[in-house]
Amino acid sequence: ASIITFHPEASEHVDRTLQLIKEHGCKAGLVFNPATPLSYLDYVMDKLDVILLMSVNPGFGGQSFIPQTLDKLREVRRRIDESGYDIRLEVDGGVKVNNIGEIAAAGADMFVAGSAIFDQPDYKKVIDEMRNELA
Image 1 (cartoon, rainbow, N blue to C red):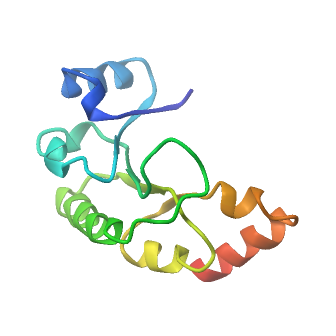
Image 2 (spheres, rainbow, N blue to C red):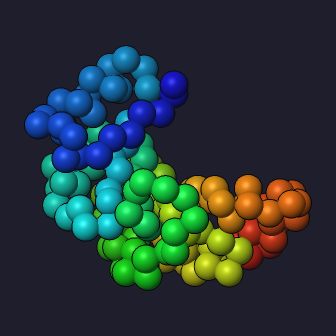
């Protein structure tokens, strides 16, 4: 692996865990469930390469995008920009052709699209449509 992300609730020592990941030559990131507070970011921005926001409750594919994620995205993008660090902002869950543009406008620069692509007969067509929405 070259990037390791984890849910901050899964570690008693978030800062130390991020440090260990980086010491082992990987990029490090945190994953936020829809209800996880962003306060976990307050003291670790300097150790992050990726912040992943879950825009559905994890567990199974095909769920609808939770619209409140857009506000959370804007807040995380603001924090990243103010920090001056080079941190990627990823979204996972409910990403589709009809919302990827809005998700990008809110600040995301990486997208996970599972069922939106793999439930379609022509993967390339869906990916091209998503790219067009981002252009």
